[in-house]
Image (cartoon, rainbow, N blue to C red):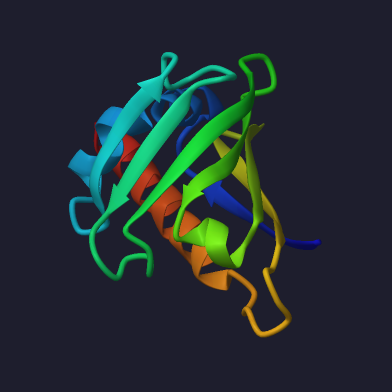
Length: 149
C-alpha cells in the first residue's frame, strides 16, 4: 500500500476551517466552479460517518469525471474526517483509495493534515500525486475564501 501525506498551513482558525470542510457540498461548486461541477449527498447528512457523497468534476480537473465517497469516520472533537472512494474511474486503477484529513490549531491559524492510502491496480499505475496537488489547491482556495468572508 502506498501513502501520500501533506500539511498545509492556513491563516484561518481551526474552527472556521473545519466548519468550511464540513460544508463542502455547498462551498466547493461555488468556490471552485472550474473544478467541481457539483457535489451531491446521496446518503446521510454529508458530514457524518456512513454518508455517501458524489463529486462531479469538470473534465480534466482532475483526470476523472466523478467519484463517490463514503465517510468512514468524522470526529468533531479532533476536527478529523476519513473517507473511502467507493465508485468512479479512480477505483479501476486504485482499488483501495482512502483519505483522511485533520484540522489542527496553530497560533491564530491552523494546519490541515491530509493523507491518502492507496493500492495500485498494477505496477504500471503511477502514484496518485495529482490528487495531493488537487487537495493542496483546494485547501489554499478554501483558506482564501474564509479570509475574505
